Image 1 (cartoon, rainbow, N blue to C red):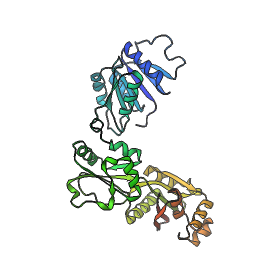
Image 2 (image 1 turned 90 degrees about the vertical axis):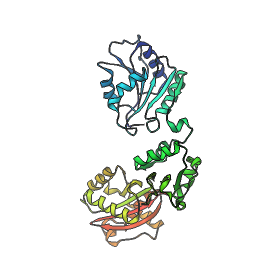
Image 3 (image 1 turned 180 degrees about the vertical axis):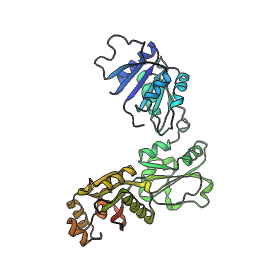
Image 4 (image 1 turned 180 degrees about the horizontal axis):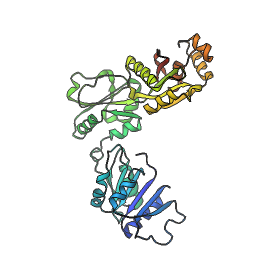
Length: 363
């Protein structure tokens, strides 16, 4: 679902309010019922309950625009046509819009209207239908045909999908009954076999000749060419970058050095999981900004942790100069390994303008 908090229930009529109250009593805390200002709830509604009843004024569409991205899910107790017309000016994309479920005032049907897979509207519709004793209405093509919701599977496996435009073509091929290839890095093969057995995942080395006419998914952290226009990458976030730097090095220099390391290692930036360094660099502005620009967590480790990692991995590079300055013979390589959960060092230390970078992959 989107980054909003809680569930908002919006209704227009008194019968709709009764359905909304029934739902709110069963949903988790953080639910808010919005009603027209002239619609007074029954006495005591909401008192002592884990939900709020809040009046709104003015036309429905502008009001929905105000709250649209404040909640992770919206339940609209009204006719589907009213909901569609009121929401249409505020739609962005299935990646950004919240889950929207439309419920008739009698509670007989819960329609997954927007963001069925990624936003969680399909799941929310089933939950609402169960609570009201009604029927969930799901129209997502893959769900109707009993096919795996690939976008949801990718998200659950913490993999980014790129390019998005081609992913639509892959889903279209799946829905139309065409074979969809699933080629996977060997360490992840079992995970994908469990998640998508119907697609019969194969090792990446089995990339078919003449695959440009097919549709498929390539699950890899490497920079490899896609076989054709109906292929997408699933990028698992498994690469940690250990960073060592002088004080005051700007974020741009760190990002450039990291980019060089990734290109030379043949690895995708989209598979980065974290940046890592020694703990007294935690407040280094350049490191913080670099992590922020990449949308990554900055992990730091004590000198003792880094030194212990180097003892366990005697092949790591050691620098007397670094040892004299900070008391340990290396930062970027052990930091990368620790951030990757004692992972495998796949790109050793490289230096660029006062920045050192090493890359490790989680096992």
